[in-house]
Every structure is written in C-alpha cells, then in structure tokens.
Image (tube, rainbow, N blue to C red):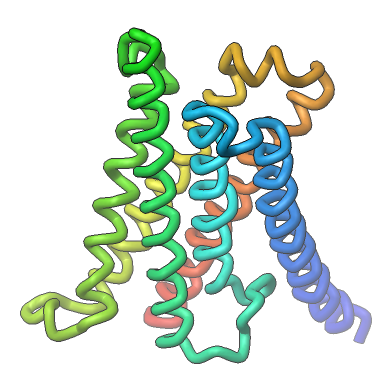
Length: 224
C-alpha cells in the first residue's frame, strides 16, 4: 500500500514540476520582452527596434508557440490539436517576421553609421538564426496543408519539424544570450540585472528542450 502511494506521488510531483517550469517560462517570456522594451524604447532610434523585435520574436512569440503543445503549461489546452497547430504556425510566422524586421533595422542602422556588418559572433549567429527561423516557418506549410506533403509520411515530417524547430529555438536563445553580452546592454544594466536577464533565455531553452524531447520519447514508447 505504501509502495503504491509512493508510485502515485512521483508522477504527481513530476507533473507539478513540469507545470511550475512551464509557468516560469511563460513569466520569463513576458518579463524579458517587457524589460527589453523598457530599456530600448522602440521607435526612438533605428537601433532601438533591433533588441526589442529580436526579444519579441525569440523570447515571447516563439516560446509561446511551442508552449501551446505543452501538456502541463498550454494556455489553450481545450483547443483541438489542429487548432493548436494553426495557432502555432501563426505565432511562429509572426516571430519570423519580427526577426527579419529586427535584422533589417540593425542592418540599416549600421549602414547609416558606416559600420561593418556581421563582424561579431552575435551578428553571425543572429543572421544564421533568422534564416533558420524563416526556413522553419516555410517548411511547416505542408504540415498545415497536408495535400502538399504527398508521398511523405506525415509522422516523419512532424518529427523532422520538431527536431529542426528545437535547433532554431536553441539558436535563437544563443543569439539572445550573445546580445546580452553586447556593449549596449552591459552598459545599460548593472551586474545583478545582467545575470537575471541571462538566466531567462537559458532557463527557457532548457524547459523547451525538455518538452520537445519528452514528447517524442513518450510517442516512441507508445508505438513500441
């Protein structure tokens, strides 16, 4: 009897932990984006749009798009899987659009100031990340319109999309972390604030990575 109670309490604790981590990720995505908006004051300069739009894209929109499928932290649990899929694609597409606009803003700003482009690891990784995010959004179209995926296994396409999506999200998190190391950001915040801000993308990346990998581990177990 004691053993069965112990076995029951473990999944409950596990579920509570997952729910708490998902709630924390929701909170981080909102707070980090709001903080970046406060710090950069978008619209004051061309540069101001870059940190705001990139944070909006990768910290908020893309995080929320993936959390839609979280069994413990989805804000739309009652939606059908098809509805979640379409909402996920819209949020990802909007995130990719924000990322492209943010990249355009910094490119134009550097041109105005006569500065060279893509000379830092942040710039290079950021460019790669934006390209991957756009490609990921376009590659998801056959998952929405199944007729475009003739001759392909839909289950395999979903696995490939999840894996490549996770790579895109991790690239985005890495770009955000490198952005926090920039001269502009380090000069704008104190040491303690910097560490708190840096924890945001790191924690979110771990939670999202765990969600995606766990979902496909469970599917494999059910299929075996």
